Length: 348
Image (cartoon, rainbow, N blue to C red; front, top):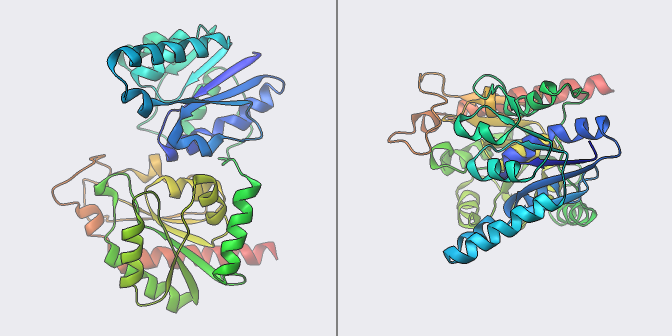
């Protein structure tokens, strides 16, 4: 295997979870060219990764804005670009019609994907899917074990940059966070059904600041600045907004905080990849399958419901998240802080 391609088109959190295969592939094939194909929104997760050779970007949004004839030309040109790289082994970890077509068109001798309906025809190595049984990170590893590739590590990775680290350090200094306990609040969520009310995040901030003498940060991304400002205005204690960041800069900041309280979202998975403990709020998604990966995290759910993990993007009542109390989330923070203290004592 001299040339290997990993395909994971989107979303940010899912791309982070797919990085679990990179170290294992590099250990088994130390001299191989290993490339990663994704879309522009997730580029920063893998660009500059020390164990990858090249990042291929599918400009899906730009192509979608073209007229039909130009779309066809652009798609064919991209397929030809992939084929021209003459891969020996391609992993399709996205499994939609487009990624299956790219895998099939690659011409690779080994085309690996999961047994999803007609898309399985694009692969000559078909992996039984356990997507409804195991964590998504482990689901990626199934493809490696199916091929007999040893799984020697189980860590996620986020490509770092020196510029991002320098900017994070500068913000830490400007915000006077050195030597302080810092808890970040991430209120975002790709689906409306995954979000927890802002006013409860604000109330939680007051409790956390008072109980643990902590400084609070509000995490926000594109289009979320007004909500972050609203959260800061509602909170009974100062809440500092992080600056506008790209994903590498966000990762550098999240790697510095002591704890992240978050909904199920990309920042949650980035924090887990950076080794930061999370208190993760789950409702319509299943934390056993999509939760923060690792053993240092606390999960908070509204266990009074039997519809948890429904995977609905919208819901008429969203009781799973609306029913989560501040007290329940604060209890998760208490468990996380206690765990942090135990680990600190053990290291000492």
